[in-house]
Image (tube, rainbow, N blue to C red; front, top):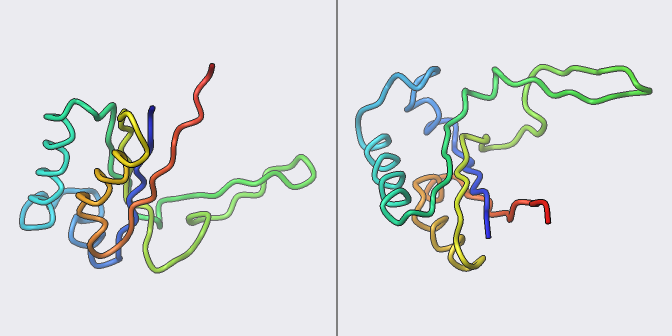
Length: 119
């Protein structure tokens, strides 16, 4: 089964990566590199990407058929969506086990959700 692990990070952790992900050094990036390598070595990762900071987001709704565009993320919260991993593992428990190893679980959170697939 395929799952998405959505990583939510504190502003401090988002700042550690730099606005364009250019600060690829230090403990922050070492932890993320190790996690990505563990997923790859286990053969469970399909894709993984970090996201630009939330101030680059736009939220789109249709109101009476017309687009309403709001600058910023859908939901403001203490932590922001920092990235995601698409993994394929046999069970929900296995996906949760991977989430417990994710660096975002330390200061933020990791949401685990199965993908809705055709079939």
